[in-house]
Image (cartoon, rainbow, N blue to C red):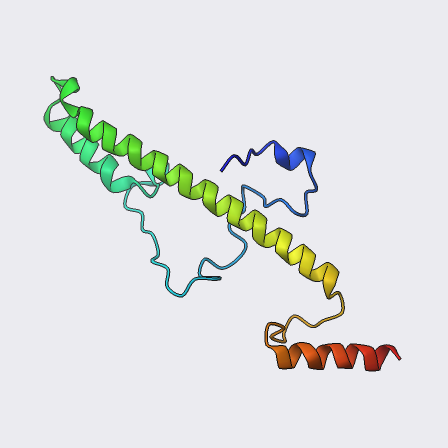
Length: 136
């Protein structure tokens, strides 16, 4: 997972996902069941590790004189932030692979209609026959 966002400026932009508009593909594309993540804090503090942040803030409020007592909660929250960042990078790289796959598919089959299920061998043969028949 060494994808760097500066790669977007050096490579072809059509193959790189836009980090501000991720994801463009549906989240369940290629997965049978995906659990939707939830957020519980205000918009400025909102991320997917919010329940750890609420525990940390609550503990800081209860032990405000002893700020060193919150190390465990701080560690849990930092760890969840790290895992959330890793998940974001995996989603970014997945989006990048799907865009590259889409480009390769469009170069290989430029005249096929996207409404047909081209993974089905019967439709694929019908599309190839129709393409050859129309071009002749």
